[in-house]
Amino acid sequence: MRHSLFAVLLFSLLSAVSAAPVFAASPAHQHDHAHTHDGHSHEHGHSHDHAHGMENADSHVHGEVLLQLVQENQDLLVEMTSPAVNFLGFEHAPQSEAELAAVKTMEQRLKDVAAWLHLRDGGCKVGAPEVVLRQAEGHADVSFTAHFSCAAPAKLNSAELALFRLFPAIEKIRFDWAVAGEQGHAILTPRNTRASFRP
Image (cartoon, rainbow, N blue to C red; front, side, top):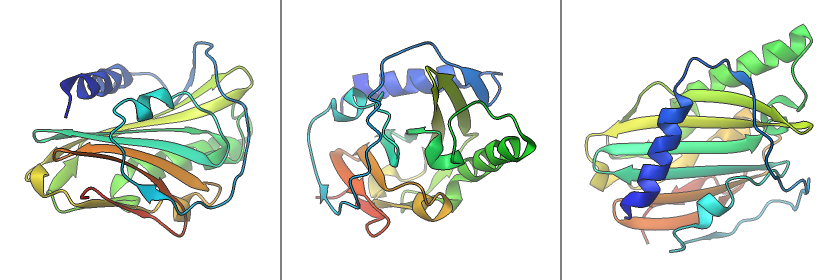
């Protein structure tokens, strides 16, 4: 696995760990505003395109989530980005008590990583995760970062995602990983929630 990808993601982790509130302003940047819902794909394949995940990091498609998992030595980094509507049902700045409560609930659920990300084998333990809600140009995005320490990273076998159950608005998860010398990509759906790290 290339060290450059891990370094880029690790830099993102270090940048995210700050005293910023869960809702923050974001610098203006380009997004794909196509709010498409193309159904539940059952595609699951492997790819050796090292830049695939990073190229799609700024896409903003309702119903879709981007998830990246990178392991190096005993360190495992997980990053996720998503339109806020997938988690909250809205994208404007929260104003009412109900909307503020929805943000709090989202943050609590995502920080309970063990409830929605199940890593098989590897003996991985998560540190303090970060959840940030950013508003820009009329919409909002959620970013999530978590750093794991794995006792036996070479034994990491697969990941099971329960985000569809916790957040029903999610239709598709684009999942990229670089684990134990293997790299791959999978499209996860409510009917296909598991990705294997082995060929």
